[in-house]
Amino acid sequence: MAEKEETHDEKDRQRFADRVLSVAEDAVYWAIAVILVAGSVALLVAQVRTMFTLLDTPTSNVMLELLDGVLLIFIFVELLYAVRTSLRSHEIVAEPFLIVGILACIKEIVVQSVEAAKLVGQGPEFARTIVQTGVLGALVLVLAVAAFVLRERRRDITADDEATGD
Image (cartoon, rainbow, N blue to C red; front, side, top):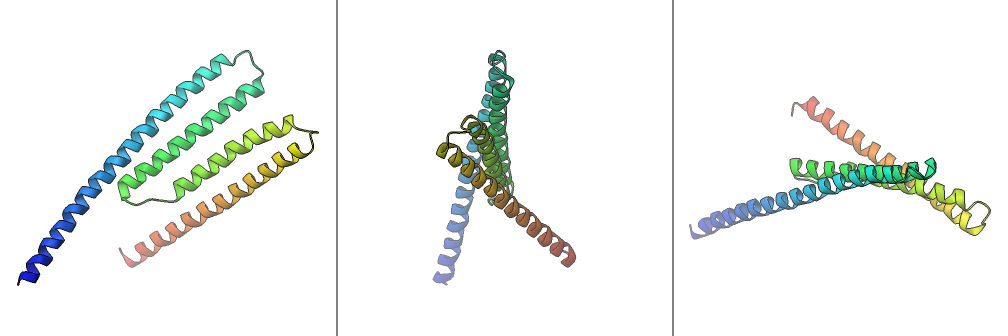
C-alpha cells in the first residue's frame, strides 16, 4: 500500500514539474516573440530611414541596401512564425527554419553577386566570390528540397489520419 502512495505522489510531482516547465517554456517563447517583433519593427523603421537618406546615391546601391534589409525583416518574421508554431503545438517545427536558411542564403547571394560585379578581372578574388555564390545556390536547392519533403510528409500523415478517421 505504501508503494502505491509513493507512486501516486511521484506522479503528482512529475505532473507539477511538467506544468511548471511548460509555463517556463511558454514564457521564454513569448520573450523571444517580443524580441523578434521589436527587432522587426526596428528594422522596418531603419529601412525607411535608409531609403530616404540614400536618395542621392545610385539606384543600384539603394536597391541593394533595401533588399538586404527587407530580406532580414523576412527572416525575423519567419522566425516569429516558428516561435508562434512552437507555442501552439509545443514542438519545434523544422520547416520555418529551413525557410529562414533559404532567405539567409538568398540574402548572401545578392550581396555576393554585387561584390562579384565589382571584382571582375581580379582573378582569385572574383573566382572565390563566384564559388561562394555557387555553394550558396546549391544550399538553397538542398534546403528547398528538404522543405518540400517535409511538407509532402506532413501531407501524407494528414491524409493517413483522415483515412483512418483520427
